[in-house]
Image (cartoon, rainbow, N blue to C red; front, side, top):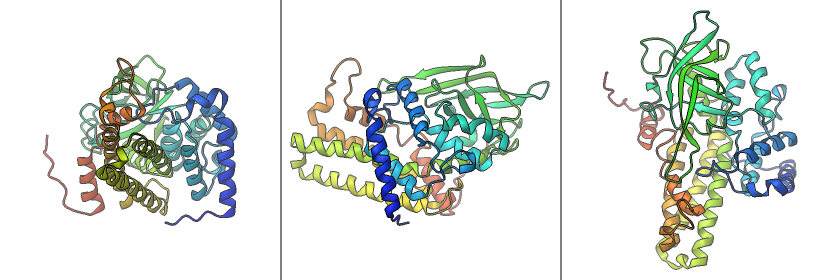
Length: 397
């Protein structure tokens, strides 16, 4: 897909850039370039306030239908917004999971009552979400989830029991969408349901997981008869796998262009440092910088291919390769950053975790090829679902 920017689009670009420049000032100035992957612990309350500021400006739900409170902007204008947001150093979005994942899923598959209940809170920047997918024994193999849910005696509520892990910002979220097994004895992707669960209740315990970077944006979440109202299920009981896969399709939407602009900011910092400390005089370093630059271009072109198709949550071939492609690229950028830093890569600015931006980048990118589906699992998905190759033998347990 070749996105051509019309004069109207360029006027929109100027509007976005002007608004961001005007509003990323004063109390929000500290948020510039903060709160991204590996830095999601930074300024959570200020970033929540920023979400409300964005809502006032009409910058949430840009692609959502007007009938549901969105602006129904074109793909090209959505791309422009995400690019300009990253270019301006807009902070990591506290509302990303709500706006980018559960919101589009509710629009596509939720009931009118669910849309009326949940979409306004996302659009106003007032309700935040987390994702209850991975479990200790079901990370990349999502179909192995063991968290279970069943109706209470009156049939009015789902009672959820189990454990989720690697739950980003669970300690900041008011709601969690949970993939749970609602059909006793079911295995694999059968018998799963997609439930919407309030986080502020006695049956939920959130425990932080400290990472290599010293931060704790990930959490373990324990459910002990946690309650979800009977009507807070998307689709029917047993539709959970279908809904979960659609949500992952929406995850590979327009915001991928914004992700790549964040990557470009990181690459620019590595290039700046290489010029400043002399590392760029090394021919091998220059070659790796060029490879990183060209690799990022390839990611962009593939994302444009992804956006050329229907934005309905379907996982087309070009979308299936994206996680493997970007995580491998980002991992290599982290290694390159350390080599450009040279001896400084071994020194901390302060104890115990006074990491520089590039040191944090390196440590966090070690997880890129694991979370969200390991590279090994991604290759299986590409082989089996995209290329139609024979399925890997499964061990029956």
